[in-house]
Image (cartoon, rainbow, N blue to C red; front, side, top):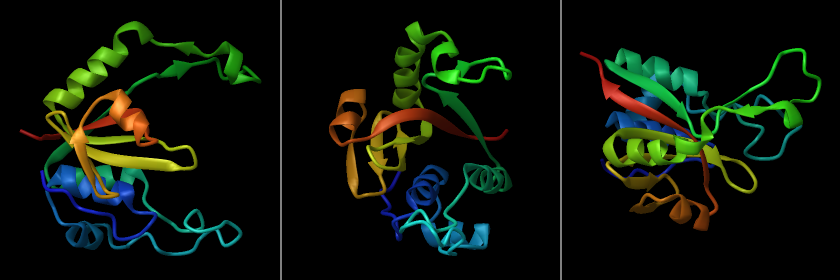
Length: 163
């Protein structure tokens, strides 16, 4: 995997998927037919006002490139749809072993991790235990190393060849 840095503030997921799919950011923009720059929420500050990218359109391109994308949530939760307040009634699914399995996936696969910083969403690419951050960082994966940089992982999107 080759580190690629995001061309725009709103394009970390674009750059992360470009790395995981082993294509250039320019080629991925061509395949998506947009660069995420359209202002669609004019009342919001930069970069939240931009169209950005939805993971579903990146999955679509991955499928067109003969790759599958499988999500693995670090801490999935369920609640009945009639529950007015999801917070207290959420039930974490199998939380005991999920962190270790998440680490195993990062150490043995390739893909994208989506999560949060203190102020926004963020995405990084990974391959065989190494993180490729579109902000220009490359470092060995651990929850501590990510959190030290202000990134809190939520979901690993495993990118695999089809067939």
